[in-house]
Image (cartoon, rainbow, N blue to C red; front, side, top):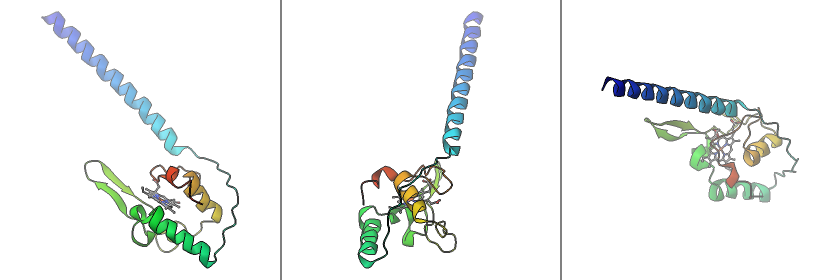
Length: 137
Ligand code: HEC
């Protein structure tokens, strides 16, 4: 009986150590992925600001891709996922005004974010579903 108890304790101890090591390995992989900087060179696309181009952009943003579903009213950002037990995901305020992150965005920064999922500093936008945006011209 004593022997069985001893081996159970050894087994449980080993399991805890293995789970601990696995958690540590996964954590460091996750951290290195989050901190990775991507140097994405984007092709310059001429972006007109004529009425037709602006109308097409508005249609894509409002009706097709629905950026506002996540970025909120007027694209001012919001907590679009908020589950106290799990966590909160806040989308960026895309305006150029107060609290907005795109005031200094160049055309290349927009392309990098929307087509490649990378912010101007080269950090990955992990939550943005960029794979769904690539097909729209
Ligand atoms: C499913 C939700 C979701 C949708 C839809 C979405 N976004 Fe995002 N977006 C996010 C989140 C969350 C972030 C914050 C970074 C991250 O974690 O991905 C973000 C970040 C960004 C950024 C980077 C801001 C910065 O920090 O520099 C830009 C630009 C952007 N989104 C533009 C858009 C545009 C334009 C659309 C529509 C074509 C769009 N997003 C649709 C969730 C979304």
